[in-house]
Length: 492
Image 1: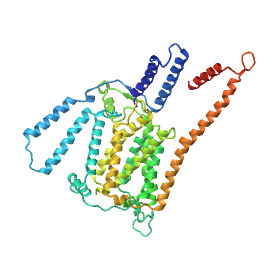
Image 2: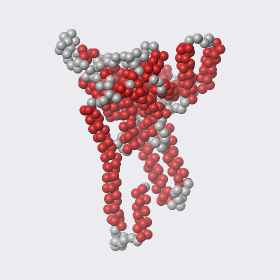
Image 3: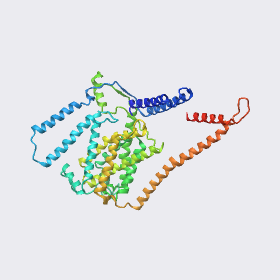
Image 4: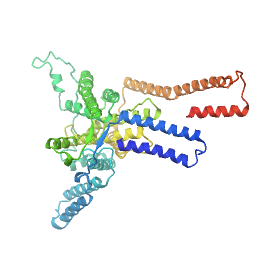
């Protein structure tokens, strides 16, 4: 959250406590009870403010609101109206039905984007401009509607529909197998003994590095990134009988992917996160900066975050956060698998621009979605519902998987080898057992020990010597008052 949001949260806590006192839940004539409630609220507020200071950077802004930050709703409406008037009155409509259909669909999408950029709800990000993130929110809606349309077509019609986007599509393509000869040094090839390494050094190597660098900026946690990276390699091992594209050499899996490409991407991503968390965020209006060098620097910093929040997922703190972290890992892995399965069932070559556009789309959508998920988990009192971008990203991931299931159920249903099935069953069983032990058995044991400790301390409090040195068992009324006073102190 931003600094303004943390202030709102603190004000809301104090306001709720004040309303509770004024509404009669706390007796005004009882100073001890009101003092206890106030102390509890102050302690909770200080704990939340301490957490904000530990995870959120300080932001200083002079509040300059220039022409650049305005929504320009009237201007956009005027330009849109002029464009429609030109098409209606001045342009001659072509007699090509297919061309008019394509142009009508594109015009409808552009009008929707104009509406969304000016009128949609702002997200958690404001740099480089809130309209930029509203644009990607509308693109998310358009992409989800496109997936729903493809889902409701037959397999043949859906694949042939891709020809309307690119005439080269709609043709079955062979899958490339990255396995085969896995010798790092091939003595049989005297010309180039290391040809196996050079053959696998294609465009996906820098794509792996850049992709994991950006994913680290999204997740902002080293352990989660490494778990997702290693788990995806296990998924490739498990599903290489379905897609030949998953078949790779062992050193391609663990050395080139996990250690070199993914590992370096995560390392440099964490270094960038450390720089962003320590960087001072002091914003000043462009026209308030006197020097040209300062103005150029301010324009460059416009493309950096407005503020920075350090993500502390804490998956073992409670069952809700643990299940949420498991869900995030599962959705990330499913989105990664959809990249390979979608191009397989829709007959798209890996180097096609649609595959690249999908990755660019998830880069812009994933960062906002992860921030909304973290806010929803970390501060459910202020963020009472899941963010719009996170909701749409989850819906898109599920819809893509349903398209894969519908378009090629034979490949999806190919039986997994028994050894791999046993390994996955053992892993899932261990996760379930640890979950039950950590959040149920362990908590029950701790509560039982705490109850026994309280029962052992209670008789000692009752048998405490009085002022004259004698011990006496308190009467029924005094025992009740003592226990209620003790309970009130423990609650406070």
